[in-house]
Image 1 (cartoon, each protein chain N blue to C red):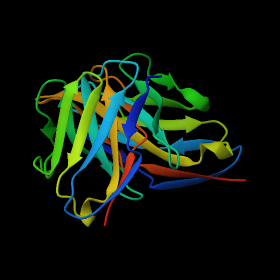
Image 2: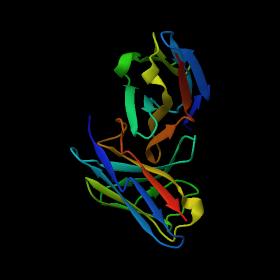
Image 3: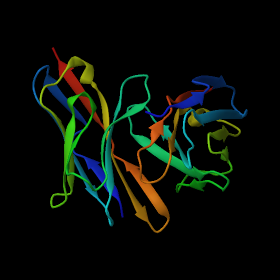
Image 4: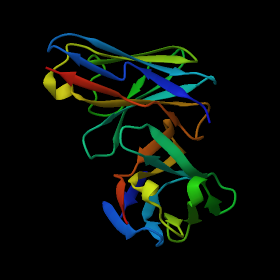
Length: 115
Length: 115
């Protein structure tokens, strides 16, 4: 199957700093990429959907100024957590989709810890 | 509106016995349905998908699921559990709404396999 990578796999940062997470589709062009957040022992919560070259669509309750998403190419999307706080600590997962409603290919996730 | 209900938060079976993970959905359109598996510290992996072809779908590792429109169900089964099947399983529905394709994850079912 298609491969999606995420970098970094884990990051620890101080409160108030910003953190960027990269999501890459390695062997296919992803028209759509998704960003999820997963709390311990919980399901995935969709944060936003991004299509290449256009603004991301954020789910209700997700602050777009705090979670900046850029999808500049068909193989790369980035999520920047701005002015991170301890409550932003979580497991962030991206996925890439060639076209809807096909399956999504998931990255391995990024564990963010904000001290 | 879409929704996905995984009827059991956890299921425990003995190795070699059948597995049944239940999923009910609601969708306004013709949905695509997926089952994903998440092993500890690993990314989500697609087990199988239904996209309006055969209602009985066979997936990887001996899993299969049957789409039953009359019951709005998409239960996941396997004839004989293996220790390596212990993981978290997510039922996912995707269909096209007024705002484009929408994907919803179920809450997940943790499968325990006893020796």
